Length: 397
Image (cartoon, rainbow, N blue to C red):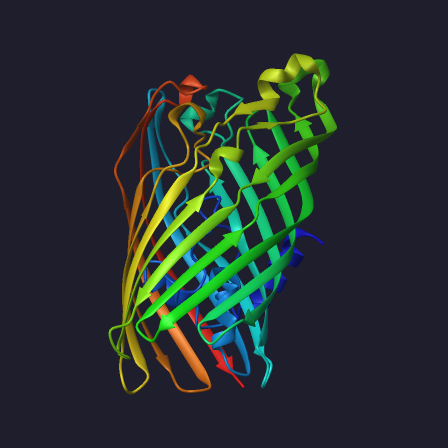
């Protein structure tokens, strides 16, 4: 299946036309517009079909069948000021669509869910004339498409405790360009998830969600430019990459039916990403086929609040703090990374069978100074800000 075909499927399922499955960073933590408005603090709430992503155990709270489509679109304002000049990335909106369906068996403790979404994505293009790309080893463009087809079964063990397990088929393509080579590969993998939701009372809810790591070996075509002389040409190559596991814990406090306040802590094991090595090139080209990354595990801190109104309206606000996972030495400009602050505000309405949610998000990051990078042309100051919009629609029957 080609990248265009997969993108078209996702777009159709999520009711979002003419959009591409690119995002501004490797992990896409924001999926549902309601959760996004709450700073992504949703693991202990998980009360719509996107629970497949946030906490599969939450599916036991739903009745009948529910279908939901989402789109999260981000405009990235990312600039670099290095010793060789100033550059700025394309700041057009890039969209990540997703779709979910759930079904709760009548008079049964079992519920089922299925989702199609992108937990990882990347779309960065600085142009081949970027100042740092004067070093032909430094990538100036990267496209990562990672699509997860995720099936979940949830079991309400008691009136207060639900558990879930899920399995996924993951399909991924990647393209990386430098001024010396182009790498274009694809692979697939299988993943799994485990979740729990404990609601000891109407005022308190606890959620836990585990997404397992996946490992891929990209089978790729690598093209070396004419600058390589006798080595120029096309090669069949491989590259191993691990997409790490994540664990999210959430606590929701509901003083009454009008308010829901939640705090989540999200940990991603980026320590698994040590390097990217392109296998299949001549040993003399090792400098062009090895990237020493040494990423570090990082936390995401999430706080959200929702006010529900009697006429079906709701208003939410949220704050998210994302820790940087990429050290100065291994930073590549194609992966925007820094400590970031996310502020979100959203509004939605539930009509009974039909519901919608719209959210605006602004992201601020302190200017990051990079020094001691593996590639000296990358050293400099990087400024990363962004804004995003998210929209969800759902139907129950």
